[in-house]
Length: 338
Image 1 (cartoon, helix red, strand yellow):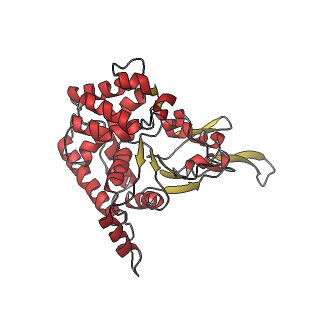
Image 2 (cartoon, rainbow, N blue to C red):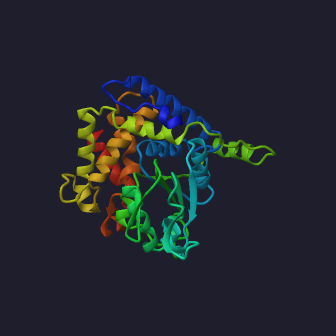
Image 3 (tube, helix red, strand yellow):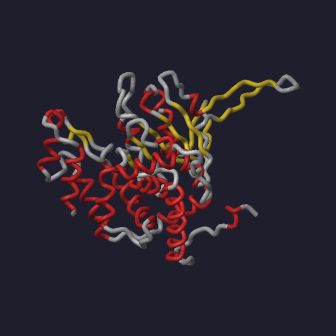
């Protein structure tokens, strides 16, 4: 029997939910330790990325070159036992280069038929490197895949592997010749994770552990089936009424015209939609499991507000002229519930 067949389906009415949560928390602790031997000084980035995967979402990694974005994605694929593919996005990249295409073939008897050749999107972990360098037409090829976990080519649907995650990277510098991601695509990323420069101690560790004769390599800690099992488990984690109210209050207060906050109505062009509420609901559950807790708290909502909301809101011209940042706007929303 396969490993997937040996795993029992989760039924919260019969299984020991607490025991399952503890098992998943321990497994992800091993994953964090494995990544920590490869990625140095980016614990927040590792945590937010793992929360995204545990919640079943996609993540947009933004940082200057050399901060380990590509290294993180490659290490994740190995440590979590996922089939990973990498696509380098360039201006001449076409949708078929990602999704695949149909080719006309002729068999030995002379009968012609079309055969679908799968593109790199048919992976469990797709790395879209420098996603904003591709044309809008190519970027939009990922929209259906990210939302429906299937693609349509020549009128036929093709299911993607499970689990399926897109980890896209973006360089905030060198914006000439790039195409900003449309709002519809940004909204499909559960989180936007900003990667900052490492602290002195972490950078010292990078020097000592990555420039010598021997360098640690990532090793597999879990399997794709175990990740899928954990993702299903997360949806059974109970969320208290106070946490749900905090999510709704934060998201709805960020919408100009509906908000009672003067700063939001004055500075925000458009605010987060219902998908932001869904993302927070799943992410706070995943964060609780990752930290070994049986239920999320309002602290989880506060901790995840920035990576979940920052790409789902836009400042108006007046706010940008006054030097108002999105960080400051989200801090105002946090104070609303904090």
